[in-house]
Amino acid sequence: MQITVLAAGSRGDVQPLLALSKGLQHTGMRVRLAAPQDFSAFVRQHEIDFYPLRGSVQQIMASATGQNFMETGGANPIKALRAFRKMGAPVVLQMAQDALEACRGSQALVCLAVIAPFGRSIAEALRIPLINAEPTPLLPTRAFPAAGWPIQRNLGGLHNRLSGVIMLRMIGQWFLPYLNSFRQGLGMPAFRAADFQRVLASTPLLGAYSPEIIPSPADWPGQAHVSGYWFLDEQENWQPPPGLEAFLSASDPPVYIGFGSMGGRDPEGTAALAFEALTKSRQRAVLLTGWGGLRSMSPPEGVYMLESAPHRWLFRRVAAVVHHGGAGTTAEGLRAGVPAVIVPFIVDQPFWGARIAALGVGPPPIPRQKLTADRLAHAMRAAATDPQMKRRAEKLGAAIRQEDGVGNAVRIIRQYLGE
Image (cartoon, rainbow, N blue to C red):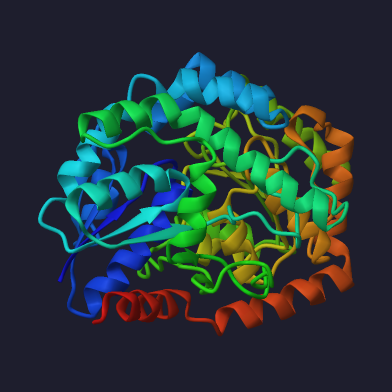
């Protein structure tokens, strides 16, 4: 069977679907992963057939609109909608057209759930089954507030479910003009923003997160499955630079600091703030620069600067992880069994920050707009030294390491496809 896996977004969106693609291919399926062209080398090194989608995620996030959104757009859904419209306008239709071509000849489509209406349109046009996949929960539920909703406190079931409904309507409004233009070209009737929820609720949906972190809510439909995280254990033979090994072993474990692609408008200023917080908290750190360009020409003593390193290798060697709260980085920190300090910038990151705090494996998140050296120092000190927080994180990490999220997801997909 030929199956196309469709992803769009940052590495946190693409990487779990690459892990799933490898799992499907291991069972004998022929798998093609369609994703933004930025990820060509990354996907092909794993020997998965790659179909590039036009549009550069890195260029979009590095644009003035992208940088401004990272600094100011995460806490306001209206601003987020406007920013997404502006950032996505040049590439959304191109990506949709490329995705359609990527699916030709396939017998099934696995689609990133946040773009499920495009996946449904393609699946209907080609008359193939659709399965949606999500690194972050999208279906409305009474159990917790929606990712992206500005209020991440649990104010009760009615508030929680309503937040999910509103967020899906807003996401639907964002891509509705592009979606209906795409559907018109396929000879299909127009889509409504309210149809997004119907697509998710009526289609098999795989949650690529641990039931230890998000137990499946009682009000989700039966075809919504929480499979466990989809980890991609790459670079198993990765060798650290000699200086890193020496730094890690020189004293007590340092903290990790890295914000992935979330640099914002002033990455040097963010780095300087982090250095001040390290001095105040008397912590050493390994700082990863990432896409966002978090860097400094002269890091202080006790800070090791590194462009990249496998999170699986690095996180188990540190006392705590300080990051933006992306779904993938959050998952790796949880698996490593170390406390986390979340500094959310946008979209789903406040959701994961709130979840970390609720589980007791990290202090309350500090939104990037409210980040100060004193606040960060206090949070890092707590995460690195609180024995109860450490024990909870270790216990949770041990449970997650026993899961087989990819294997569970592959079995569910094969059952739906009659394989």
